[in-house]
Image (cartoon, rainbow over all chains, first blue to last red; front, top):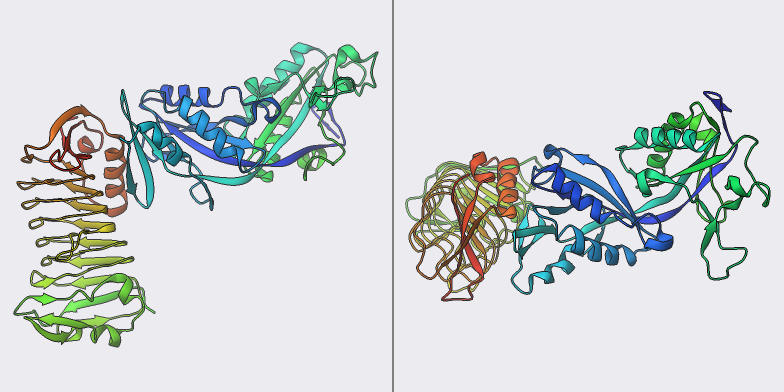
Amino acid sequence: MKINGVAIADTFAEAFTMRVARIVITGRTAKWAREAAIKLTGFATSVIGCKCEAGIERELTPAETPDERPGISVLFFTMDKQSLPEQLIVRLGQTVLTCPTTACFDGLPDAPDRLAVGRALRVFGDGFQASKVIGGKRYWRLPVMEGEFLIEETFGMLKGVGGGNFLILADDADAALAAAEAAVDAMTSLPGVILPFPGGVVRSGSKVGSTRYKNMVATTNDPFDPTLRASTQSQLPEGVNSVLEIVLDGTDAPSIEAAMRTGITAACRRGVNTITAANFGGKLGPHHFHLRKILA
Amino acid sequence: MSDAVTLSLAEPPVHALVADCIAADRLAGLDAKQIAQLPVVHGGRPGALGDFFKVRGGRSSVVRIEGDLPQVEAIGASMAGGELTIDGSVGRDVGIAMSGGRIDVRGHAGDNAGGARAGAARGMTGGEIIVRGNVGDEAGARMRRGILAVTGDGGRGTGIGMIAGTVVVLGQAGPGAGRFLKRGSIVALGPMDRPATFRYACTYRPPHVGLLLRYLRGHAGVPIADRYVVGRYARYAGDLAELGKGEILQWAGE
């Protein structure tokens, strides 16, 4: 199978089940909502080192937010139920609470699993906090030096999908980067999906474990490292000199599929040799995204 | 089961009519005949709801009352859910000790709207009351939770002794509003005489007020101008003769 002359490998991306929350941050202006969202999603590229994965899903217009102010929707992922509220409490408390003008709302109101994140953060008010029930939802008002910070008491949690991916195998680093940027541009703001890595792109794809260091959870994906072509069992076709990976987390499998279809199609451009995907033989996760099936 | 229960005033009461049997959640389990047999007290004498109202429909938690009812008291008392709309004015004690649902009064309401039963420590503990007119004295008295919104003026002692919850007055709040407030908020969009035991804190844009007013405008159709929704409010903390964790938020302009 080829798209625009780019080979689509007959393989699949292997993804796993995660827990996801959607956080809606609003601010007096879009700038301040974004400032908070950027800090909230900082150092949240991979559960391997960051214990969570997060990213901006999309910008929200005032008509789409509870307080009719500009907003940002953030998706937040962890591997288990327990660590999601832990991460949210720490991160929201240090980033959104601290950011001028912002308020924080639940973006998954229909999710039956509720995380009492706002309830935990209320104690920052040192007894001066107050709650309000509006439309059946409880909000906490935390006094801060600027005025008040408003946060919803609970946030919904769903089962999501983490680790959707595809690899761009290109003639050189410039072509790989241009293709990756095109893919990210096409996938940005698609509903239900985030790209947690810097600019949505990963240069240091990893394999599970290490051939040399026992305590390493993940190490360089040497079969796809062009500099190791001569010294490892390379999987790179002839002429490939640079590889970049796009990693996706989503609220469900169809969202990931739709985003992969859009992103791969955009990445199939001049200078790209092959699009492939990372998997672990089907042993790691229950979600398998077959590239050719998605693109058919 | 019908879409709604409609009670039409057929025989206007001569004396005060205590109709605390009318609550949307209670009527949801009854047919028209059973509703007509519900007990009322007219001038101190027992009677039946059907003596005064024509009942249409049954087994619905959406209730509509047609007629002007200034003599009818305690409608929606202890209501825990459903929607109750009154197409006209009502007497005292509407929604006393209510815990859920919404009461929409398309007229004025008498004293003690959303308040407490005589001798009770708590008034409303949940739900929403919208009064599209004026309320009598001591509306929202001893409220523990919930929302009371008044598009007209409040009487004397609006929100007196509130434990928590929110009272919004779009018109003028009467004298003594918020006296003995423990917690809770009185949002005054119009002028009011504050008790001396409230102390000024600051003027700011409280995020929850915008959210609340937008909710009332969007979900309950309460006409609230943008200048109030996005406006600045002067915060007065009180009642300092009590716990002092309550507040009066008075609109201070855009």
